[in-house]
Image (tube, rainbow, N blue to C red; front, side):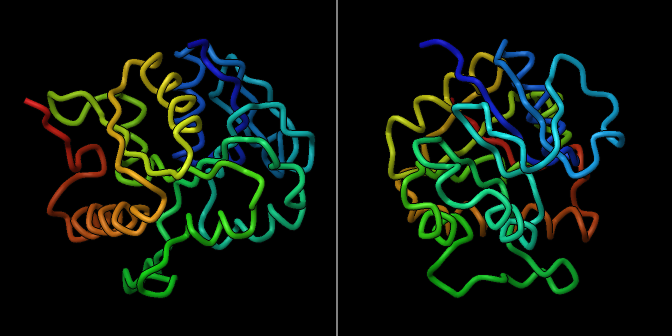
Length: 207
């Protein structure tokens, strides 16, 4: 399968890491931000302002959970129709580390309800940006866990991930996003309490 094109909304730690992976994979890569003058250190990408047309087959919402509403309001649901939309958010109050979504739900489920014509995938939230950028957790390859109701969407994202040299694990249907967000929250809690570093984290061992 050919590597799909990708649009990344946000150029923070996760957005920059995913952009680096996309360029490494040979994907046509668009990065959208509020202020293009503040984007530095990214090569091989097209930088545009948020609100510009989304050119990618895959759209990654590399934003804080609280910023998703504003982006959807800017574009409207129709702009995401037919696209694979990746949600890497961890919906947490970072002071208390409590979830910001009701029990039994997830940020990804909320997103899917708001973008009914998109193929939503939960991914990139269980590993830190540095681990995505380096492609390793300790001595092991970084594994991207993903959940979605769309097998086609997972196949498309998997092609990009594996072309970038990372490994892939299918976490099941989108209802499993709640578990991925819990795993992401645990990873963050371990780092905040200095039990692991922001360059480490949870690894998937297949053997």
